[in-house]
Image (tube, rainbow, N blue to C red; front, side):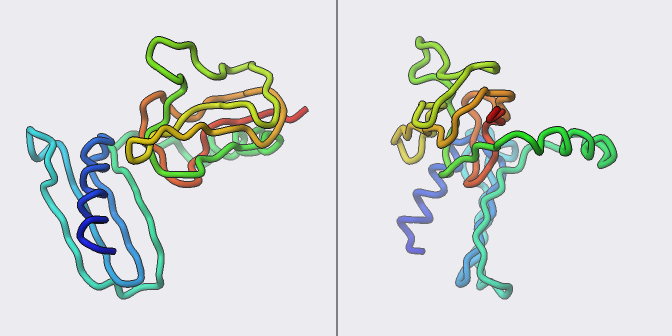
Length: 162
C-alpha cells in the first residue's frame, strides 16, 4: 500500500462519517480515527506498524456504543431469517436507496424483484455503482439505512425467494 492509497483511504473515511477504521494487511496495520475529537472532522490519529498476525484485511466503521440485544433473542430471529436469501454488498462505500435525492427508492419492503433489477447504488470513490439482484423474490427487509457507509459482504436486503 503506497502513500496515495493511504491518503485516498483517509479522505474516504473522513467523508463516510465513520469515527474509526482499522485496516490490516500482511505488511501493515493502519488505524484511522476521525470526528468527535476534532471539530472539523479531520483525521486525528493514524498508526502504521508491521502486522504480526495472519494476513487479513478488515474495515470496521465504529459508531458510538449501542445497547446490544441478548443472544437468546437473536436465536429465534436467525431461525426465522434462514428461509430468506441475504443480498450482500459487493463493495465498500456509501449505500443509497434512490438514484437521486428527488427520485423514488429503487425497492421497498414488499416489492417483487427479478434477477437483474437494480436494488440500490453504492458510492465508492465518487463512482455510483448500481447493485443488481441476482435472485427473484420479494423484499422482506431493508437492513441498511439510506446514506450509510457499508462494508464488503455486509447484508443489505433480505429476499423471500418463494
